[in-house]
Length: 416
Image (cartoon, rainbow, N blue to C red; front, side):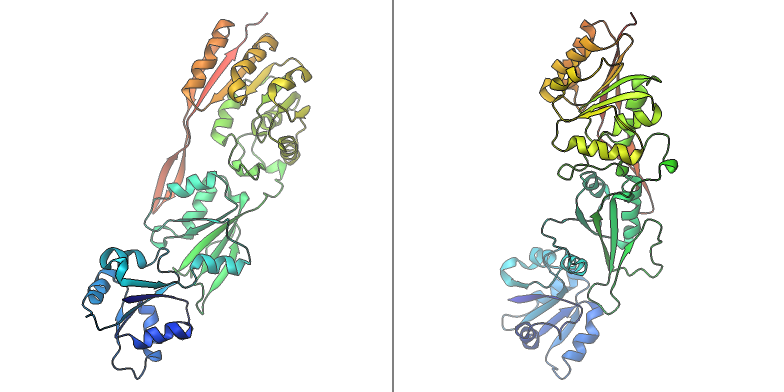
């Protein structure tokens, strides 16, 4: 039996007495090179114990295999050997039946301990030897707490910051940097987007991203349109469920917004499209409808952040709200679910002459269902597919990460 013992920075002296006993009784003790001086000093006088370097897992496994049945082996590893540690390699090469694991505190446990924050609901992802695409996708789901096991050889914390920036989410997360956790030169700091990464960054580092409400924007500094996704407040239980910036820009163009008139935003979500339309055309009357509980409050909060005022925000199913609103000149039909066809027919029946309806869709089945309604009404039709890519850092370069494609069906009612 080979004992694999997880340690902290003070090992072996900081190990519990029972585990110290296992080390003392071992014929062979393997440990990382950085732990060797402390180990040698602690074992001083025990000439029968052989110490070897464990940094090369293949050589380590060979040395452990050479032990005879009467010899004891111990492997000292940082943290939990079965969490991104040496445990996986040992199991693959030696078999789990010959191994006994004694986990120590993992870097994730230590990071959240330093924050003084419960972490049972935290998410984590590793970038060690991996592409950054999974991190990009995970951030779109807007987790409340996300630990990132960085890979210094592929950018480390700079990689994470670049992904946050290119995703438009810098304002939505506090970035905590943890270096050399448990060691004498441990350093913990929260880096603002303007602060540079330390020039003496320890390669033993990880990042924890904590979601926080974005600060109120300075309205005069905002772009005319195409606001970053991270500027909008979102539902806590459905983060990331909003019209992304690239699609939002296209929808605003397809709506061909008039100077004045009535705009319905049906299935408004966070209100992002309708509120940006008000920033472009302040004299429009925006009626935003969202059925999710709390949706009305969220849209009003986003409107206040952007300095615009909708004519009305209605928290109800769209079909039940149509009679409360004046006849539209423009309609963005983003919701409706299974009632979307019925909702589109109601829009067709109510639309003012020359009016435009724009419908973003995630699947071709919706296109097949809705287009005939516009054809039957003799509306002119445009169909497009919006497929955008965002540049994301990849080692020393940049990769283009695809976003979900969106079909856009637009219909225009004849004048008079």
